[in-house]
Amino acid sequence: MRMYDIIKKKRDGNELTTEEINFFISGYVDGSVPDYQASALCMAVFFSGMTPRETTDLTLAMAKSGDMLDLAVLGDKTVDKHSTGGVGDKVTLVVAPVAAALGCTVAKMSGRGLGHTGGTVDKLESIPGFKVELSSDEFFAQVKEIGISVIGQSGNLTPADKKLYALRDVTATVESVPLIASSIISKKLAGGSRHIVLDVTCGSGAFMKTPAAAEELAKAMVEIGTMAGRKMTAVITNMDTPLGVNIGNILEVKEAVDVLKGGGPADLREVCVEIASLMYASCFDCAADEARPKVLKVLEDGSAFEKLKAMVSAQGGDTAVLDDPSLFPAPQYSHEVKSPRGGFISHMNAEQVGIASVVLGAGREKKDDPIDYKAGISLLKKTGDAVATGDTIAVLYTDAEDKISQAEQMILDAIEFSNDEPEDEKLIYKVIV
Image (cartoon, rainbow, N blue to C red; front, side, top):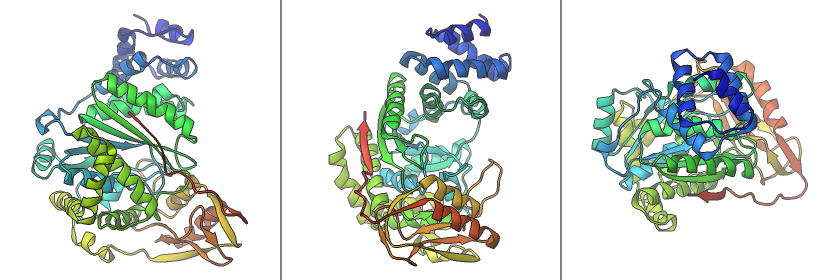
């Protein structure tokens, strides 16, 4: 078998066999297939696409290229939730403890933020003392005891995906549904959970810019996961405007705590209730409508918040800051961004707002960049809100005073105004099973 023949076969629009796909992945991981041939095949897939069977084979080969967690010892209600990324997306911090409080088992690995999207691991690390790295024994023992652990991605999980992702990023082959879907689902399969709920975001702050593109990706991922033997659900959510009010690590933890205490912004609460309901419905084989009252109950009675505290305590974190968020360290500077005119905010480019938070220090552009957990943005006005000239639209928080004017201009450039009130936007577009 030759890599040349595999590239030519896919270039000409033909279907690759399972053996050919396995040959490519194993060769790329061990170094016998060089980058230039791997990039050629990625470009061929970009233009020719893949069948569902090919994409499933690619996903399985990538998942099996390294270690795979076996969560069978934890029972049949292990559930993982994955978001395709967004701005102000602190959903995992809410839905993971909600699901655990309802009897689901949440043994989850999460990633760090890169670019304009934040990462769950960074948010958790903003809690003083919280450990995102646990040994396998510690991880399993904690999940058995309290039903939840969220840690950073570690070990030798999906090395093929790590290499391919970096290659696609520099060869203009990122925007391919089979390659995106296999990248995401290979990591979920390696993570071991029986039930997988995908939050596929769309809009200016998401990778998929339209509901139609998000639906295509969601359907592909659900089909792949189902063919691989997992119970799959996907929900398409709106990320055309930042989710919630706060963007930045400590700020987002505070907002997640608000939701877990029965409050929080209406849009964040709605998305969290929907996703947590789908997680419960998948694990307990019921309708989401049946799960929703249960989700609302554990938010209102405080049991979901107590589950978050139990996880934080078990992983070395200081739960005092959850009980009293004013104990979190404060940034040196805050600055109010004022509206230059009256009317309505007709659109807010979520990606640009996310980049502004990175400028302030809340995110990273390269994977090894340090971040300032205190930095971020609080949005006092969002899409659809009425404003008067001089109203405060946002408050910026940072230790880097010299970055404030740049971030302020980015916020203002991200906003479009109108004299007419815009129509309400959907938050939940569609659920796919």
